[in-house]
Length: 230
Image 1 (tube, helix red, strand yellow):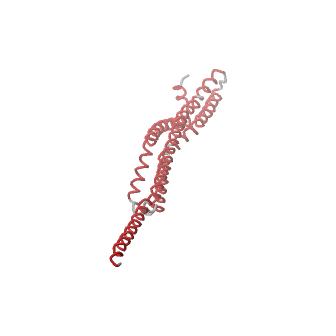
Image 2 (cartoon, rainbow, N blue to C red):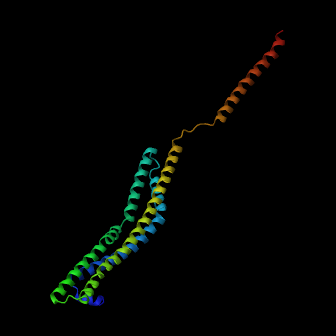
Image 3 (cartoon, rainbow, N blue to C red):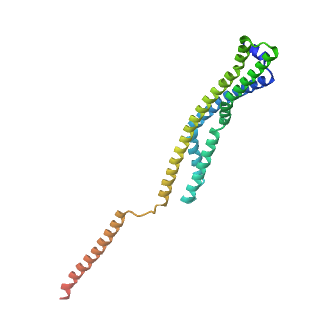
């Protein structure tokens, strides 16, 4: 007996469960492949995209004070990191749900198939080993199908979770760098402009030399005028 024979003698419940597993399998494969490709693309571009967003925001905040600028930058970073997290988790519920319920759907199909096979055997009145082993073995096909659907969904889910962790690591790392650069820029802009100490010392020396020169000229003039008066 093969799957064709099992399908021929299966009822509407078993066929419904089979089509449900088929739909879950197709959905998990399509969602898993798309999710992994998009997550890898996001991991490669998240740092540059976050820097571009903050740079455009800083241009519009040139005339703002340091506290307001830092607050706006922090809010912008939190908003975009939240968007990256939401984008990276899109499709994961489908994979997780498929991985969780597919084996149980297959198990339910097996239980129902065994019940259906035993009922038919009871109606026919033939209870030999050959009449029991075949239908029961074919009913176990549903359990195998459920496991076959769940395994790829689990693999895709774990791969997507790992890539998403890398996405969030790159986003948080670049966010800390941008906040540090913003703090350094604010500290430089708030620092008071002071004249160099060398310039002040040079000015004092010039003033002292000028005073000394005037005193010498007055003394020389006094010595020249003193003999003429005698």
